[in-house]
Length: 548
Image: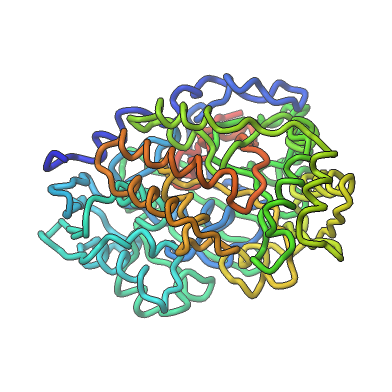
């Protein structure tokens, strides 16, 4: 690999989803636009607004600590509070963030040249020590961080200048610069974190970051209010909204009413049923954007009969995905052939190779109940209903799981639906004890950065935090490690393609669909990104009034 290769020069050369960045909105009757009309952005917000009310349909966050968030609600809020070292854009490309330049000066040294003019909300300057502490605490067991695996190849993190930090590595790791655009790359003030201790990121402990908004108040069970950061370092992105109020509205009917009345200005992850009602109103617009979300049915643990690959194959064979997409997702989705949706790699230099490898995978199976019954007969006996979990109040999840339940009944498999409170549902992804008593989990997952290998590794390698059944294929692990460490994009794509061909048929999961992002915004405001990139960018800083 050539020395002194600027990573962001490569990553920003092509927007990951630029091909779909056309103008779009709802068709007016609740029906989604054609996939070619997906859009990444909305018209820029113009004037200042005093307050914007935004809904969190997945409920109240359990934490806003960047090292510990891994779900829709906390990431929707935190992305506006804690800036990252590299920044995700609406088209899923990357650009400089708190680091004005990120450079591999050799295969074992990633240099972060920090901006010299960044301050935290309290006015104190961001220093290399803050950056080092923010990264290092993620491999401290006491933090219970979710992203420590990103530091697997890192041997040391040290200040190499007054505004420079260098990560020494065992070798090249193409995931690192991309990971710096996620909450893993968020920078917290060291002194504040140390003082707050375990309470950091909670309603009691608060936060201290550098983002365009600061945490104003957090009333448990009530809402979270962000206040504009008038000291914000990025003058090009100074927020026009003085205040953003997040409300926890998990009931789809309540959410629809609040959006129709104007009590709430907008939401991401708009349920399909709400989209139908809101598509007929003139007080706002339903926007569809490109996404890296995946809908999966996953066994909760290895001891469950649902972990038997033959049973999973039987469920896959009896589910009519076209009907699922039409009836549950309102047509705003496409069938999924593997763990990662194709849009994840759209901006990669080797995108054509990734596309070809994905196209070569077996097609999504047509429904075949007779073949499915034969597989059930061969599988481990199921003497009781399988317990499948979804979040309480999530109408979309309930409809999808009810659809799966009806399909499973055709082949003699009974599924019992258990609705968990949002905080419990969020916890089960990281706490094995919460998954006890469950057999299946319907997940609406997502890829947060343009790197398929790191996402997949969390589900199919022994060290992965989402590998709940102990799946272990040494060749898959070797190939994913090669994809992560190769400095040649073509070689990396080739290694991933080989791994994908191996894990796709036998990893314990039923691939259902990749959904489009669905967002509603009141006509009095504009500027919100319409793509799923909102999860990793300061999206609320783009909001402004329309004078309507």
